[in-house]
Length: 79
Image 1 (tube, helix red, strand yellow):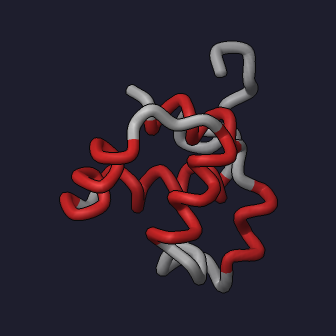
Image 2: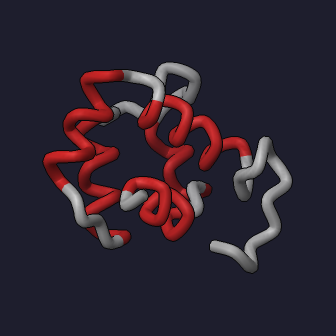
């Protein structure tokens, strides 16, 4: 999202940054991403719920997903 305000380490917010951190810093998950490309928002959400059903290890639970910028995550997954 080129037009989005990115105020947390280059991401829209902490939740988006934290999810991206876990998506792209684990070889196992990175290999899974390659197998599931291309992503749209719905597919990205489903993928993340499969990869991290209770949220990332830093999230209290997956309720933090409601704050994730899914367009930004989708864009990153497709790179």
